[in-house]
Length: 275
Image (cartoon, rainbow, N blue to C red; front, side, top):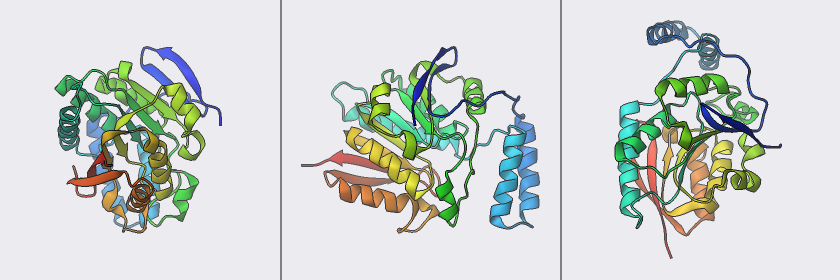
């Protein structure tokens, strides 16, 4: 699938691989968000898990409700801690590469990373957010936890939420498309993406995580950090755990040291090139 750059706008540069969604709807207020979450929890007690998820997704997207899945303060603190380590390992006193995020959804992690860079006065790192903006791919239907289309947040709504958060668009680029179609060398060349020093994996599925890690592998800096948002959602033979194990087996020149997570299902690893 062809990947093209959209023109520079006041909101920042953007790359897309699928037609952009049209139209925007004013997002719900935080008070409305809390109300819908409470109603969703109450209704969810009487529904099967997948039916419950489908209804929640319909409410979120129909009413444009901002959702904070991650604990923002803890995630920003985690970013700052790992950035400090990367800076300590760099002769230039800057991280050696860029930040790549797989699974943007409504942009909460990008906001946290943007604020972490400001807090540490780090200026040279670019932030790339990769997402289909159509939810999980069809392969999700073969998973026992997730379902196709889950975690859909259309592109314009996500950009609107990032605008509202006041992110620095000069260093952020969004890439739209399913990973098995767009994560390739031509895209990396178009983005000028040579080195990645921090990677956020929040794409849930084994197949998506595998594709994301394969794209990152040749670009990882000698010292790098990978964050897995759904590490504890599956056992060792599924999901992010299986994909990362296979990645390390295929890349024995990296040693991975676990650092703990920023919430109960997350895990963070520091990678160092050996030999």
